[in-house]
Every structure is written in structure tokens, then in C-alpha cells.
Image (cartoon, rainbow, N blue to C red):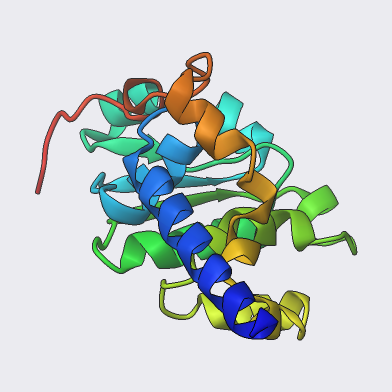
Length: 182
């Protein structure tokens, strides 16, 4: 009986958090939603904070004549970038991908569980399972729990809906002007 109650609670909490997550359109969660569902720019920039803050999408757009979007994320490297690329490729084929290589995150041995925390929310995305397996073979089993997928955002998600976070991210800040669509 207790096991059945735990399964029901897990399922319901997962449904509520999925609903909240899908409604977020600002902050880091808004950026995740945009990349996973809407990004359609010709040029996508990936990498750590160097990519996030040092690649000006408006300049790239002006020089290339193509639209550009910055998918970079502070404190993350190739694991999160590859996951975000897989999410974007489910609905869009960019013309060019720019990846800013950072040895601290891409070459040296680091704890990649931080990247998984952001990718767990997108467990329905094809091929993310291989990333989970590469980082931690136990992740596949943990992902059976709907609550586990959202555990790193347990407090953050409801707070974003009640009181939007300061605008760290907005599509206009990350997206260069669309000068030409092919």
C-alpha cells in the first residue's frame, strides 16, 4: 500500500512540475524551454560562460547576414552543450554551430552531474539517455522517478511562477537580429 502511494505521489508531483516548467518563459528555465522547443536561428553558439557572455549574437548576425542564438551556459561544457544541441535538432537544423572549447569543462576530468541536473528535465528528448549513461550508469534507474527529474528545481520552479526572477535571460538578449532567413 505504501509503495502504491509513493508511486502515485511521484507521478502527481511530476505532472505538476512538468506543467510549471512548460509555462516558464523567463530566467534559465525560459532559456531551456526556448532551446528545447522553439529555437530556429541559423547559427547556434554553445559553450560555457565564455560563450554565453563573449559571443555577441547581434554582431554575428550583422556580419553573417544570418540569425543567431546563444545557447551557452555558465559553469557547463560539452555535456550540457551536446544535450542542448540534441534538443534543438529534434525540431530545427541550424546552418552553423559555434562551440567555444574550454579545457576546464571539456578536457579535464570534472563532475558532470551539474550538467545532468539541467538535462534531467528533458528526459523525453531522444538520445539524452546515452548522455545519462556516459556520466552515471545509475541515472537511467533514477530517471524512473518523476520527482527526481525536477529535484534540483524543487524550490526554484514554483518561485519563478509566483515571482519572476530578475531578467537574467530573455530571447532578445540571446538572439541576434534576423537579417535574412534562407
